Image (cartoon, rainbow, N blue to C red; front, side, top):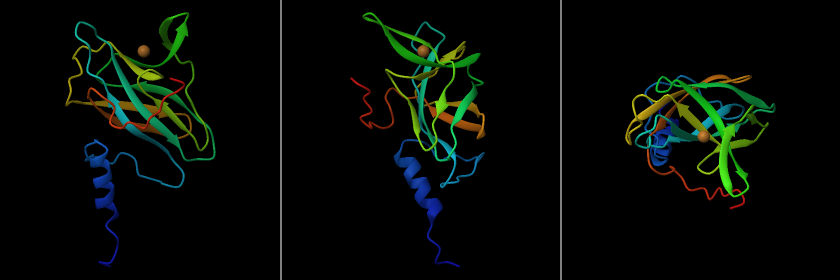
Length: 164
Ligand SMILES: [Cu+2]
């Protein structure tokens, strides 16, 4: 039938508008009604002189069950951790998150100033314009492969201020 709405074209247009290049590989299919999805993924350029870099993304849980992140790995880093920022007096510090939960029907946002991904052992610096592969494994949803475009600022400004 030729009357079908060209949904795939619309999705590509939306992805492009969000700053994410259309992916050639569809490692995971979209299940809009019930799925764990990752969006707004990006990574910051590696500061000069260090071998660590930060990455950000939003995880949406469209299912009726809480999920949690088991592991995050990337071929561009020796290891990847999830960190959170905490105030120690007047000093902001970061520490690993023991367990990242994604509540049923909810979002978890990793962004500048809050929770973030930390790439350790980055031997080849992240440079703007590159794309960093990230392999996430969730307890229920299983493996999700994400690509993080390297850029200096967030792809969106959702005004996600957490008590700023
Ligand atoms: Cu950190």
